[in-house]
Each structure stands twice: as structure tokens, then as C-alpha cells.
Image 1: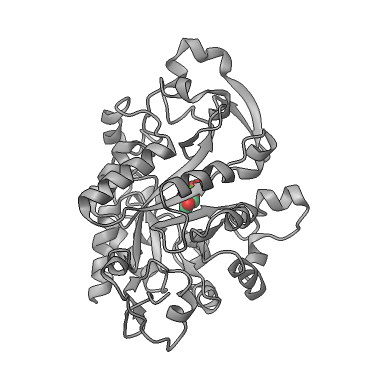
Image 2: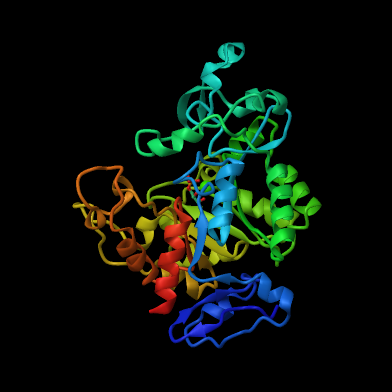
Amino acid sequence: MTQGARRSPGRRTVLGAAVLGSAALSLGPGGTAAQASTPADSRRRLPVPTVIAHRGASGYRPEHTLGSYQLALDMGADVIEQDLVPTKDGHLVCRHENDITGTTDVADHPEFAARKTTKTVDGTSLTGWFTEDFTLAELKTLRAKERIPGTRQENTVYDGRWTIPTFEEVLRWAEKEGRRRGRPVWLYVETKHPTYFRGLGLGLEEPLAKLLRRYGRHRADSATFLQSFEPSSMQRMAKLVSTPRVVLLWTPDDRPWDFREAGDPRTVADLITPEGLTWIASYAQGIGPLLDLVIPKGKDGKLGKPTTLVRDAHAKGLILHPYTLRNENTFLPADFRRGTDPAAYGDVFGAYEAYFATGIDGIFTDQPDTGLLAAADFRDR
Ligand code: G3P
Ligand code: CA
């Protein structure tokens, strides 16, 4: 692959669609510029830092709805994220988790009252309604609503406007929007609780691979990233399709659920060592770390000194797309909060600057319009 990064001094500004095979080349210190060779290549390149719309433009619309995805795309987000869980009849739908209690009106449906149950998902006991207990036809009778109305009251005006989208509907939407805009719509697709669902006979990876093939997103240069907190899910996807893969990483003491089930003692702290990163690079092209793994916070909640993770991951040819930066005080590091209202916006541009300065390749955000301005500021510096 010839695509790669066009470098301005000390910084990449463009990531190729083939990202990923060329990441090591483009990221190495002193690496030379690799240029896209065809118009199609250039249409598939991503700006760096890349702005990834987390669950769509979820700061402004109920998450994981076609309304949230459309707004993100209209705002100019570089990539739009979907989290996937299955229905009882094996369809993949876009929800952050299988528990749909907080993001749909299911509790207002008396016909489903008896479906309320308590189950243990990845070691956590949850009471509510779960996608795997509903057929797609049943799920489609529900309407999506805002997850955090206390923080995002304005978003509640859209409660009830959209249904739960299937992933196939999103693929069709992306295809249509891509044709209209003359460039592919990039997607960032996460398998949620893959070991748990496999145990129920609802493996996510095979139907996902089938859909990716059907819509031409199964190649190494497809405008798609795959992601999971469970490394084995990305290993499984690597056997099914060539779509670029990213391993998500939570707190240092976290042990991925598939590791627990398999008796693998490693934690995230092990995975971010040079050995751990080498292992990830054997089947994935990037990591999606919690922002705190890039810049930890002190006891006062303020940003501390950056870790070596960016340098270490880049040295292994891995790109980094940390998560999640949001405009509201309640989600910001203490040094970037403004005033005392947790729902008010803080100095998010200051926070972006601090994170971008570490050399990350992109970032997940609930407010892609803000992220795009911050990324443009950073590139123009
Ligand atoms: O996938 C990146 C980020 O979305 C991971 O966190 O919990 O929002 O899926 P989560
Ligand atoms: Ca996600």
C-alpha cells in the first residue's frame, strides 16, 4: 500500500485509508512521507487528529440513532461510531449495551413488562430489559431516548423520534450518503460483550463479517475500523475479514472479559508494555485507550504528565484513538472545568490541545463539531 502520512514537521496530518498496513512506516520517528497515489486513495484518507463521533453526535441527539449519526456526518465528523449487540433472532443492532432500559422507552411498553429480568453480564448483575430477549420486530416497536437527561436536557426534545437502528440500516445509510458526497463514510464498529453473546449462541463476529462483505467493507483499505475491549474478538475478526482492527483498553487493572473466561492473567497494564503492544500488533492495527492511559489524572483530578504510551504504541506501528472527550464539566479533567454546573461546558479546547499534543492519531468525542475545530486549530498551529 502506498498511502500513509503526509508529515508536517514532527506531526502527521493525514492518515491513509490503508492506515494501517503503513502505520509503522508513517509513524516511525524520522519516517518519510508516503503519498496517496490515486484520487480514490485521496478520498479515503483521514485527517489527523481524526475526529470520531462517539455513538454519533451523542452530545446533541440520543445516542446510536440515525439522527445522531446524520448530525455527526453533517457536522463533518471524520468517522462515526456504532456499538453492536444482537437481537434474539441474531440481527445486529446499534446500542452501547444489551441493557436497553436507559436508552429506550421499553419500560413504557406493558406488553414487555414480563421481559424485565436480572442477569449477569461480564460479571455485573443488571436488572432491566435486554436486546437478546427481543426479536428485531419487537425491538423495532421501541423508541430511543436520551441516556443522560440530567446532563443533556436539550436532547430529550428528540426522545421518541427514532427507532433502534440495525447495523445493516447504518451500512445502507452510509452507502447512500457516501454516493451523495462522493467519498466514503467512515464507520467505527465495536463488538460489545462478544464472549457473553457467544455463550448464548449469538456470536457477533460471523454476522458482522457477513455484513461487512455484503457492503464491501471487508478489505484492509475499507473506510471502516473494527474495535473491541476483548482482544479475542479482534483476533476472530482478523480471520474473517481484512478490515482494520483496534483493541480497546480500559484502566490498568482491568482484565478483559475474554481473558478472565480463558484464564489469561494479563491485565491492561500488561497489554501496554512493549511486549503487550507487540502482541496486539500481531493481529490489530491500533489501540483505543482510555484517555487516562495517555495522560493520567492526579488525585486532584487534574491532568498529570503524559505516559509513554503514544511513543510505545507508535514504535510498534499501532495508531492510537483514545476515548472519550466531552464538552461538559462533569466529564472534563478538573483543570479544564469552568464554573460549578456539571452540565455546563468547560474549557474543552484546552483539554483537546493537551491531548493532541501527545501525538495521538484521533479521539472519540460526543461533540464532533467542537472536536473538528480543535483538530483544525492543532493542525494550523
Ligand atoms: O469505543 C470507544 C469508546 O466508545 C469505548 O467506550 O464504553 O463508550 O463503548 P464505550
Ligand atoms: Ca464504543
